[in-house]
Length: 237
Image (cartoon, rainbow, N blue to C red; front, side, top):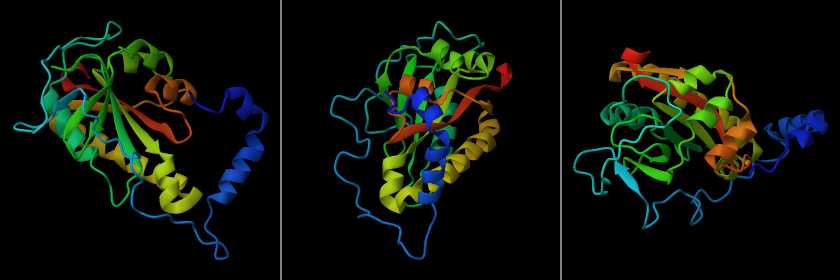
């Protein structure tokens, strides 16, 4: 559950904005508290032994579960997204940018071949999608956005999630700005690469942050969704 509520934010918006904005600035007087660059144990999303995993490359060491191909009942589009096409854009646009990239890629599948409807975390190192929830959330995700029709007809929705705790360890509170820049670069990469894989890709103009973070199982502070991207087959675009 996100720690901050709408009521709390509305009550102290000006002071909260000023404090964070000022703290995020680099100063000659106070050095940025760069922590040990080694990632603390348990911080990274390593694969648990019982993780349900869908490998995205042939001959991968991970086991591909039997394809269920379930479709989210709220899905309003046409056709099914090929897993190979999805793997192609994830492999490029989901690749970490530079050292200690604080961005994670989360995906909701509504109509993707072999994938059950639900939430997945993209593991770039393993080239795999790790199941985090088998709950079909298409209708709720659409309702949490400013473009429900677009989200409803997307075969998959990609979320660019900022791991703000990781960003802060690397650059103090300025890490928030770094995360914003990286998130934009990842979103741009998805937009540029989708057509080559026969897909359409469109960033959702707006969404209700705390509602979306709650649906994705994020606390909204240490991890929060920065971008929401609808993806589908070009024929359905």
